[in-house]
Image (cartoon, rainbow, N blue to C red; front, side, top):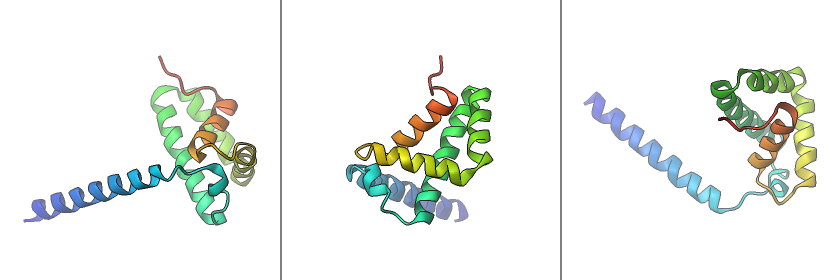
Length: 113
């Protein structure tokens, strides 16, 4: 019974996430819209994006991962502010694309092999 409940819960969560992500992606989120979010929501979004990209780097390029961690943790607030400034200059791009571009400028491209 426990395994069935866990399977049902996992299936529901996976379905919900995929359904929500699809709907969210279809909205065409832009940096312009993102910058209207509350400070707490923007900060959380940037931190989660950075952690995700850092995990990708960690699996492929230790130096890049170290660079991302050092750059962002040395002054998290200044890092976020820099990202927001770039977003203001590129309002039609998706926030994740801007965050990735900033990280590539600071720590090298996400190109492996």
